[in-house]
Length: 352
Length: 193
Ligand SMILES: [Zn+2]
Image (tube, rainbow over all chains, first blue to last red; front, side, top):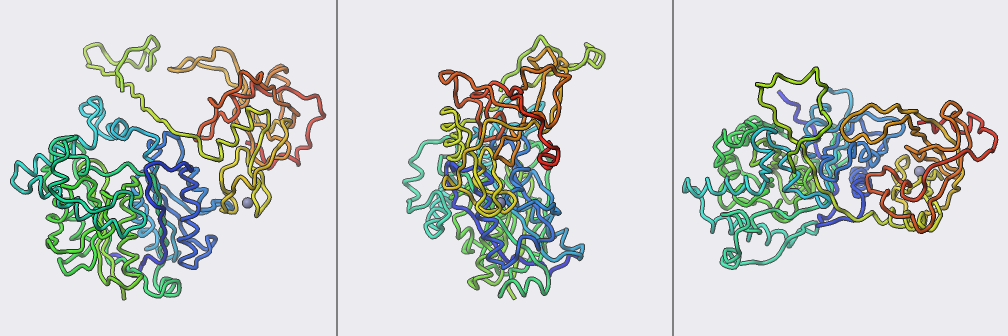
């Protein structure tokens, strides 16, 4: 049974932008510092550091090593890195804290998508024999997924547009969002397809950004934070790599991860989903059994800001922040990796 | 992305699979385009002007060339206000003499030097520098060197990237012995790389 007295006690994130002039490390330095300051923890006291990033984004081999400079890695520290969204770095830190010999951890996720051509670069994430040589890009696969949803009668293009309208409206209250505003469903549906049946607004923006989190356990968490966001359950599950070998209209791994994380279907004050393409919000709601009137992505979600490799950890921060600030008592954050929801993580959090 | 055949073998002949096995070459090229960070923008402008600048940490006083926009030891941001000029003379702290073997993309055919140079006034090495004007068997750690600048008209920003490598190559051709006596090991041993 997992330890349940580990909590988020500090956090900070950069605004998401289409193109940040600063280096990825320069994005990280102020927010790592701010997250530590918010928790009142000196960086020399941090027991374990874990980061999530992807060198392919900026094309800098070993860029993740430079990123570590934002944590102050001299004298040497105990650290690790995942070539995954920062949410999985948080997962590793959460497992590490359960060893019981340390009681604090620093986690960060960062990504600058602006230097690359994401459609070209992400094709390399697919299998090298059949799909990568075709250059299948994430938006095309999301289009196939959206088409499958339509064909199955599970959703309409109007449903996709409604998701976008709500997320962009929510994003108006999020100072870190990149795309926000009031739009009408009909106005959005009048736009041309970019990957039928997806229109540009069904796709996430290309973003640069970073996020940092401080975790602590037990009494240390209570000492560092008046109202810690306790991680009651955290689990991740993965499906087959080849997108053609699974039902793209459902997310079995999300359902399983939520169950293993202890989500019982009870009320949630806030839900943040890594629904990178608008149809995925519908799939994830269904996989989690979330009501239509639930408070999903009050931040605007990835459709408003998608700093890849930080997007999932931002979801955890958006939920944790509302618990720490006392506007929510129980929330669920979701992160995803791979193409068309291949790998999914669910984090269930509560206040005292 | 492009699939193409090359005259050079990617795999040694003895490791090649039998002819009847289907082989697919999948050569990938990815495109990146970006502006230099503001810190490197100023760095490259100075280089073209014949000056080497870095950032001096306001907290610990260490000088980084090029500047990073922060001090990785103190984790404090640095800005143009922390900019400082360093010398184009320095000490060779470490080196490798590389005998090239043929592999895909290798254009060198003769042994060459990759040296780290600690410029006077800097706390960080310039890595991967060519050393000229001295036989390879006389190159040593502690040797004093000076920059061989390209003619002003031949200098460009081309060699400077946000990835941090080749940070002077489009401005300085190589380093050559300056004739000064070797540096005491104690003065550079913390910088050997
Ligand atoms: Zn310093």
